[in-house]
Image 1 (tube, rainbow, N blue to C red):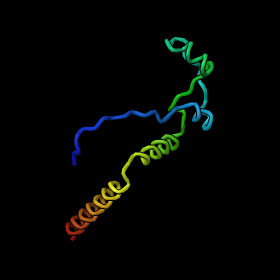
Image 2 (cartoon, rainbow, N blue to C red):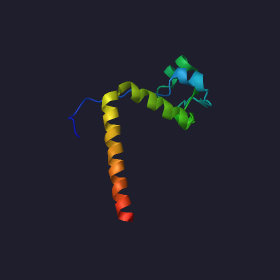
Image 3 (cartoon, rainbow, N blue to C red):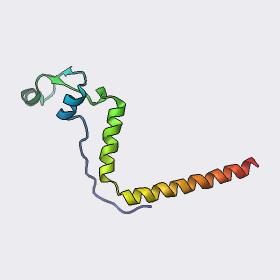
Image 4 (tube, helix red, strand yellow):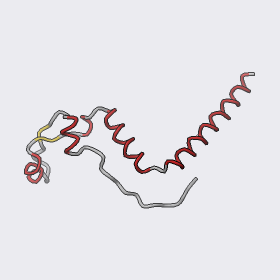
Length: 99
């Protein structure tokens, strides 16, 4: 059901410095050709880290945790119940076709 347009807020979930320290992904040399190189090196040093160096399960967990902070639990529960009802109805149709 379309509820109308809402403003979208983009939030960075990864990769931040705390996650670099926690998960210790393999470093890469910072790219000297990047226009932000000097500022980056003065703040973080000459190493950089890539998001895809994190285990997929780590990225999945970060996304799940963040989404759970923003979703409406009652609305989520209602939608899960509706989805389960649809599954049940579909299974009944399949069972009827098998007979």
